[in-house]
Length: 376
Image (cartoon, rainbow, N blue to C red):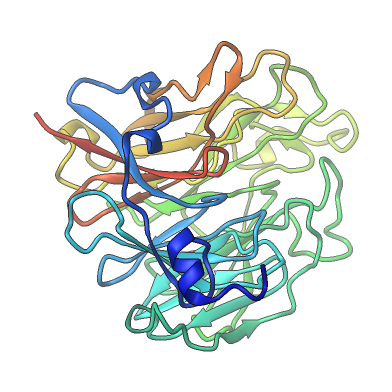
């Protein structure tokens, strides 16, 4: 496979560095989309095929960048004719064998996070077919792979935010490194690294409220306490230095049987909403577009990747969280159908809003990126 010519790679759509794959979307490329249930007026279609599609970021020119956790590549998707289907797929990075899950875009540069390193690809949209050599931004993060994959996002303060997950199911490793079980931030040039929030077991999704500029984030609850506890969390941080409970308190009110002795839940920040148990809530986003009905404006959409060891599976859906200010009014299904007959054929990961107000949803199990649109 290493000696494949670029022509052979193009003919058979095998991604190599700087090779473009044209992938027309045929009906065979839309597996079981009829099973997806959405509110009236909404439509789901395949935007692109991407192996292990995980976190997504949008470039200034509309390029959709996609990271992955189980592979070593980062992709760029281009929908040049704006028909809702990406015609071209570029491999802009490969050989990143340390889980290049997290990506973010700012000022013409793509930021890519591995477990222990963060890279920057400058002027990337101008060089999709001939990617530039990446700049190493930071390489002193913990190397633990357990909850080690990153999620990246730039805040209203211009800083780059990312989590350091707990290197275990349940443990207290902060005496070894205070960065464990936290959300960090740094300047875009890699300087000024600091802990922003503590007590966060494993966040793989966050966004800022467009009205208040507060950071909201999902957090995955611990395992091995039962089928229905603890719930995953939807949290809000309006300032630096807040502690969200892990490993002492889960979901705001459940003391951990090992680490919670003598602790008072009131001393930690409770979630804005306790989510269902073991749903693996990931890349949440505030919807700020104008395509969807007005009732969706500034509300939260959460992909639930799905449980891995629950007897009755939970998650495998998109949830809608309705807000009134910072008060959560409801937590209800928006898109379901990836779980059928107790078996999953897809697992939603991340959400990306496009310029036209439609959203993309990545799926690392079906190896697809979907586009959800609305027409009255």
